[in-house]
Structures are given as structure tokens and as C-alpha cells.
Length: 292
Length: 281
Picture (tube, each protein chain N blue to C red):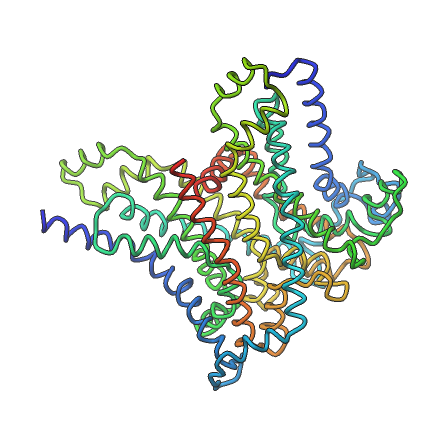
């Protein structure tokens, strides 16, 4: 027995070897190396660097553009959460067990297969202030035309709308799966008791969907803090800094602005700390979910 | 929640209308890409591209001198996505198998590390990964895009496949072991063939994330002939935006093509993949 077990340990590690090599070199090492670099004044092309303690972090506190991008990212995250919760849920409820369920699910899911750049280009054209169809149809409805992406008051909302269109299909599938897991008998019992429509939604569907709703919120929040592509294509962070986000600021600090790797690494770890809080939440939640 | 027939009909019609609106942006991209330049900016918007032309496709695929040719970028993206898929599927399957089916020293540590790494946002490892790839001399190369891309998806693959391997009945493996098969033979001849659906789901997932990734190639490539599609498209935008949306939309439509095909062929599988990945981690 003992020998067999040892032999299996060797075999197991041989199986693990290629994947772990990839994982350690390109995932684990960069993560920890980033933490180390965040305490230095390293730049690309500079042969030597010094440890500067927490200077990169304290400087972030005074960096108004970083503060601005953090605020924008938080605003985006909070403002997009309700539509991301509600739109796919509404669709899922309407689609569930209905005719054409699979076809319509496919239609709503399709935008999610597109790259963020493709999505951004499509909406850039749709929202064109002069010749874009979006403004044309709004005008036909009596709403005045606007430069949605060039106006600081609406630019972030345009990005939110684009993102909702892009990812709704993904969450729709998640919700539909959650709805399938709710036992049908519950609705039949409720119908016998004379409950229907909204009452069953509030009393049965929503409470039983709670783990799924939490999953959606947390996944969305974690993803939102890393928003980059939509902003890069649609607004470049503008007008002014109205849609500048953390990852964009990090990208520019590291790769456009004198390659300040130390400062960018500090930003990365601040972002990581924020995301970690939500990730821990998610893991707790999922453990709860499997037990349920 | 039983609905009357009229209610069902109204609901279906409303959903159908919404679905049409939902697809309108994609239709608009395709319609624009087929119009002659003079028609593109005409108002009211025309949804039928007539007269129809392929000139924008021709231009972005073959004759654009201003930016990386989309044709080349398309090929680059294919190489990168397929390379990523093969590495992810092979390494994740090999790693998930012992984690699910063997007892060995260190198993829990490895599993916790790999699953914990799902929390690492890609943006956080960006700078050190760049330095690493630069030191390896891999900037603007296929391996410089494929290997980090594979590392990003590896942990998810391990998670997905391990879940599946855990649910497999052990009888077949046991029988093979008694017949004298070794671990590798059991893995390749019994476990993998039984896992085809979940391997396909992982392959599609990895293809999608590699095909669509933008941030990493944006910094890891600085030679136009090595740009993958998303980067080439983003640059196409600045090259053409003042003149015509035609070539930009032709590029956008081309970039959607491979996943559209995969999506039509394997709709159910993609949905299953999302379902498993979504609800169970």
C-alpha cells in the first residue's frame, strides 16, 4: 500500500509538471515580482533601480488623475450593476419555458462572442453624433441629438449601455440555468393556493435565485474594476478625464508615460487589493452555493 | 405561473421585437461594410446595402498601406487562438486528472494555489509579465502572445475539467488498471475520450478569450505585421475614422466571423460551458 502511494505521487507530479511550469512562470512569478517592483523606482531601460519603500503608494494618494480614474471606475461599477442585474433577469424570466427559448437565447448571447474592440467600433458608429442611426431615431422620437461620447455628462453612460448590450447574453444564460434549478412543484403548489404572477416572483423566484444574483453581482463587480477596452475604443478616457479608468491609467503610466514600472505596479496592487475583497466574497458565496 | 395563450403570444412577439433590436447593431455593421462609400453616411439610415460592394473588404484584407493588413492580422489571431487552445487543453487536462483522481502529497496545496489564482486580474500581472517576455526575447512573437494567454486560462481549465473528472465513474479505470494499463494509458485511452464534451467547451472558451484579448497584445506587440485582430482593428479606427466607416466595419465584421461559425455549430456547447463556469465558479 505504502509503495503504491509513493509511486502515485511521482506519477501525479509528472502529470502536473507542464501545467505547473506554465502557471508558476507566467502567473505566480509575475504576481509576486510586481509586488517587489512596486517598492522600487524601476523604469524600462534603466539599468539600476533603488528600493523606495512605500513612496509609490503614498504618491498615489496625491495623484489626482489616479484618484479620478478610481472614482470613474467605481462610478461605472456601481451605475452598471443594477442594469446588469435587471436586464438579463427580465429576459430570463420572459424566455424561461417560453416558445423559441433556445433561438432567442442564442440571439441575446451572440454579442458576448464579439471582442471588446469590435463592440466598441460598432457602437462608435451607431452613436456618431452627426450621421449615426442612434441619434437619427432619437430625433424621430423627438429627443434632441447629442454627442453621447463627447459630452462628460453622458460619456460614461454610453460606455455602460455598450457594456450591458455586450454582456447581457452571458448573464442571461447564467440566470436561465438558475431558473431551471427551481423545482416546478413550488410554482404548482403556489398556483393551488391561488398565488400567481408577481407574488410568486417575489415569494419563490427571487429568494431561490439569491445565490445566482449574488454571483452575478460579484462577477460583474470584479470584471468592472478591470474595464479598459470599451474606454480605449470609445472615448480614450475623455472627454478630459471623464471616463479615465484605473487600468487605462495603469497602462499609460507603464507604457506611454516614461515606462514608470514601479508606480504602475503600485497601482496594480491597489487594484488587486480592491478586487481581492470582492473575490473572497465570491468564494465564500460559492461555497455556500454548492452546499445549497 | 401558467400563462394564457394570448399572454404567451404577446410575450413571444415582444421578445421577438426586442431580439431584432438587439441584433440591429450587428446588422448595421454588416450593412455598412457592404455599402458604397457615398451611401454610408446617408440619412435616414438605409438598412439594405444597395448598390452592394466588396471594396471595403478588399481594401482591409489586401491593399491597405496605412495600417497592418487585416488579412494578416486575421491569420495572426488564428495562430494565436489555436496555439492557446492546444496548450490550455493539454496542460489543463493533464493537471486536472491527478487533482481529481489520484491521492498524492501536495495535492491540496497545488489545488488551492491554482484555484486561488483565478482571483488574479490580468491587469495586475501586466508589467512584470511584459518584463519577463521582453527578457525572453518574445516581444512581437507568436509565443510571446500564446504562452501568457494560455497561462491566463490555465487555472479556469483545471477547475472546469477537474469538476468533470470528479463525476466520472471509476469502474472503467479500475478495469483497465487490472488489465495492466499504466496511468498515462488510462488517461489517454479512457479518460480523455469520455471527456470530449467538456474538452470542447474548454477549447471554445480558450479560443474566445485568446481571439478577443486586447490589453496584452496591445503592449506585447510593436510590429504591425504581428498585430492580432483586436489591436489591428483599434488602429484601423484611427487610420480611417475621418473618411469612411466602410473599411472599419468590414474589419469588425471579419473579426466576428470565426466565433459566429463556432457559435452556430456549437451553440448548445457554449451555453453549457457558460453554465458550468458561471454557476460553479
